[in-house]
Amino acid sequence: MVIIQRHAIPTCSMMAAVDTCYKAYFVLDVQFQSLCHGVWDFIQNIVYEQPGLKCNTTPSFRAFRAYL
Image (cartoon, rainbow, N blue to C red; front, side, top):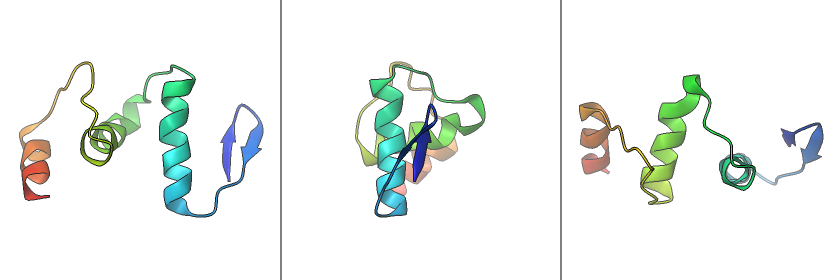
């Protein structure tokens, strides 16, 4: 389940829940939380191949992306 503004959205797997959360950020036009920004930035750039408006990548992030 994904909870968004007191509404439960059922999902069939963990990956579907992450996908729903990621897409909700863009539909609701909100910024990533500061504590989780690195993870969501990784998902945005690597999984969905969408460069961010400000692509502040660290050397370790670039190395991991090259490894993948």
